Structures are given as structure tokens and as C-alpha cells.
Amino acid sequence: MNSLRSKGFFFKLYSWLPLIILLISVLNEFDLNYLNLNYFSFNFPFILIFFFTLKEFKHFDYLFVFIAGLFNDTVIGLPLGISSLSYMIICIATSYFRNITIRPDPIKDWFYFLFIISLINSLNYSVLTLFFSFNLVLMNYLIDTFFTFLFYIIFVSIFKYYLRSLND
Amino acid sequence: MASSRDDFIIAIRSAFLKRSTQQKFSLLTLVFVSMFVILLSSLDFKVIRYIKIGINEVVYRSSFIVSIPENFLINSFIGISDYSTFYDDFKKNKDELNKLRSKNILSEITQNENKELKELINDYVSTSDKLLAKIIVDHKSPFLKSIIINKGSKDNIEIGTSIYDQSYLVGRVIEVNFKTSRVLLLSDLNSNVPVTIAPQNIQAIVTGSGDNDGEIKYIKGGFNNNFTKESIVYTSGTGAIFKSGVPIGILKISENASKSDLNVQFYSDFSQLKYVFAEIVSRSEIKSSNDNQTSNSTIEAKIKILENEKEIIEDSNTKFKEENDYLKTQVNDLNDQILNLNNQASKQNEKIDQFDIDKEELEYLRLNLVYSRKCQTKKLFSKGYKIGTPEYKKCILNKGKKINE
Image (cartoon, rainbow over all chains, first blue to last red; front, side, top):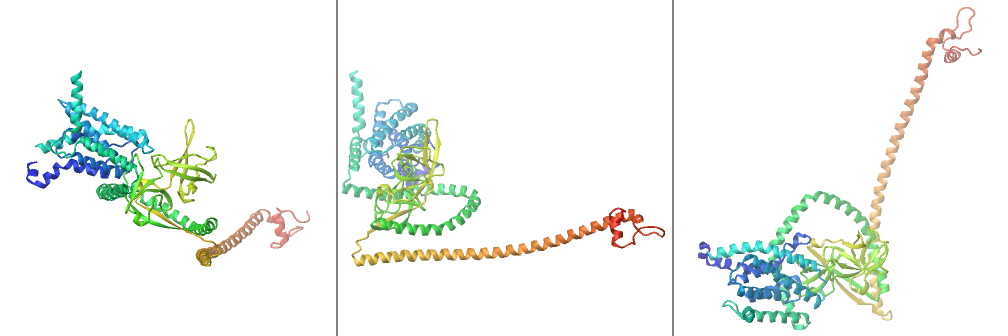
């Protein structure tokens, strides 16, 4: 890491990596949907935003997250602002959770994450079906929530490794 | 109790309003902005529409660029797996191509006739150009089945423009930007297409299932058992949303315990689309026959159609001639073969005759050894015959019995 630190540009790029990945994932829909597996999808940006806002990562700007949400809506074809609102709710939830937590516990974080994504997906489903008359399959949302919850713990271990390498 | 409520309020207030040094906006502000954007996007103001088009253009292009490495990997994987079935596919395609070539001429004639009849029924001439478009974004979302193509209002694409994969319907345009458009695929839950099911000639609506197939809904007269698995589904043109007679897929009947479901297996595989055709339709009204110019143009159009038809007939004649020549050659070959076979047969008959003669001679010689004494002439008082005479031979063949006995 010291060698990276000495190379200013690369270190900067490395420290901005979560934001770059967020941008790529919203533009590219990094969720392995192209595998065409039935009953499989997960929401990577939810995991990324939840983890890095919970850890109060210094480069994770809320405005950038908001813009990423707009990009996501454009790519998927949802009404503008839906994903931004979802991402902002995650940010609020993590901010609140940070305020009330004295001793962080990964398992508590994990189940709190499940609660938050369930809430957000319910909200999304309700808004899209009630206000925008979209035909959606509820089962897809449940599956998405379940796999996002499962994948959280895997990605968190990778993100923790990243944070450790950054702090070293 | 009161203190815990205060703590909760403080934590919530802090979450909404507190800004760390890095953050430029509080979360509460951004939440309100999000809600405002959602409200604006549901309203169809001109300014908002243009802003949205601008954002779409930038984001679609960015998404295309960002997706390049992933698409490269996916395409490489598909390419490698295709190689394993390459030879079988080639043979199958070759057979299919030969069949299709023979059908093509008839199809062209029918199309021309169809066009002419449609012009007689409707009061307008409909001409269509198919525009090749590349798919720049296709993320296969489980929630919404849509693709982005690289043609927009600049290329005369409009909302509702039909999109094809070869000649099969894929979907229609639901959002148009300057150089890009979003296409809602037939497999999407929000897609509804009026169709005809042939050969039963039943009108129905096909809606997307959210997976890779469609479901038959709202059949006129209700569900019945007349359908077969080979039934073809094509657009009926009802409601003038889609052009009539465009093939969509074949009927799939799945028998459940409670009821039978009717699904449509689309001809086109939406997960493998790379290029599609957008049909730009232009309609020109046919004015009353009093107008000389219009009648001239109608006659010219008809002449053109007839010329086209003539060209097609000439083509088919040439093909028939070629087929005729080929058949003649085959007839000659077959005649030669028949002649050869006749020769062979006559030779074999000769052999058989010779064999019969030989057999008879052998029998005579065998009997001669036994009965020659009885039949030949002896010196004193004998009634025999002279050797070599026909009577002698007859006597031998009668096993020694003489003619008078």
C-alpha cells in the first residue's frame, strides 16, 4: 500500500474505487442476470451503498449516490427518481443505525440490512404498481431481496479487506 | 421512557440533517429532491421531456461503453459454445435454406398480391423501410424486459414503431430520444399484442410472462380445446398497433392439474439479440379518381406492381426451366438404365433356355444308358428302332415303351 501511496494517482484511484464500482454497477447492471438463471437476481448497489455509508467512507458522497440512482433508473427504464429515493433511504437508515450503535456487530448489520432492503423493495413495488401502473411480479422482488441479503455477507468480507488495505 | 423517545428523535434528526464535512447536501434535501424528480417524471412537461432525453442519451452511451468488457466476455463464451454445435447447425441450416429458397418465390408473389389487395381495401398506400439498428444496452433485468437501440427520432423512429428480428416481431418502441430508443420486448409483463391463432383463426391477446415467453389471454369466445401444439400465432392488426400478419411464435399447451395454460414460444430468442430492424412506415392517401394526376400515379403504381410481378414470374419461369432441364437429364439417364437392364434380362433368359436344353439332354443320356437295349434294333425278330431316329429318342424318354405298345 505504501508503494501505491507513493504513486499519487493510483492511490487516489484506489481510494475512489467504491464510487467507481457503484457507477459501473448502475450503468452495467452488475447482477449476473445474463446467466439467465431462473429465480436468481440480486441488487449489488444496495450492498455497496449500505456498507460504505454505514462505515462512513469519506469519499462516499450522498450527491453522487443520488446521481447514481438517476443513472440506474435511466438504464433500467424506471421512472426517474425511484432508485435515488431508495438509495437515499439506505443512507438515512445507515446514518440512523450508526447513531444508535455503540458496539458494531456484523450479524446485527446483516439483519438490519435485510429489514432495510425489504422496506425499500416494498416501497418500490407499491409506488410502481400504484402510481405508475407497472405490471410487476412480486416473487421477483422477494427473490431479489433474498439473494441480496445472502450476498451481503460475502461482499462485506471483500469490502472489509479493501478498507483494511486502504488504512494500512 | 421520555429519554428513550428523545434519543430516537435525536438519532433520526441527526440522520436526516447532519452533514459531515465531506457531504455537500443533507439527506433530507436529497430525499425531497428525489420525490420532486419522481413527481416531475410522472408529468409530461416539454422541458422535462427534453431534459430526460438528454440524460437518456448520455447514460445509454455511457452504459454501452461500460458494458463493453462484460459483453466481450459473454460473447466469447457464447462463441466458444457455438463452435461445439457448429457442424450440426450448418447441416441443419443448409437443408432449411434449400427448403426456404423454393418457398421464397411463391411467398414474393403472395406478398405482391396481398399488397395490391390491401391497397384496394384501404384508401392509402403503405410503404415501409426496415432500418437496421444495433442493440446498445440489454441488461436482461428480471423486472422489466426492454432493450435500447441506437436509432432515435433522428432516424424517424416514433413511439409505437415495430421492431423485428429478421421477420419476427420482437417488440415496439416506448421511448424515443434523439439517437437512441427503448424497445419494450414482447416478453415484458406490460406488453399486450392482439393476435390471430392459425389455423383455427381465433383472435386473442398475447401478454408477456416476464420470462422468455408469452401467455394467451382474453380469447374471444373463451378457452376451448380446438388448439393444437402446432398452432401459429401472428399479429392480427386489431387496433392498428401492430401490422397484421407478422409471425410471433408457436402455441405451447401446458397441461396443469387444474386447467390448461396456453403459452406462446416466441420465434426469436430475445436473449441473443444483437441487431434488430425498425420498421419505418409511411402512409400516403389515395385521392379520388377524378384527379388525373392521382389516377396517373395510381396507374403508375399498379404498373410498377405488375412489372414486379412480371419480374417474379420470369424468375420463377427461369427456375422452372432449370428444373425442367434437370428432370430431362434425369429421364435420359433412367432410359439408359432401363435399356441396360433389358439387355441383361434377355441374356439371362438365353442362359435359362440353354440350361433347360442341357437339362433335357442330360436326362436323355441318363435314360439312354438304362433303356437303350429295349429301344434299339436287334438282329433277329426285334421291334426296336434305329439309333438317332426321333422314334428311338421318344422310346428312350418313355423309358423303353415303344410307340405301338
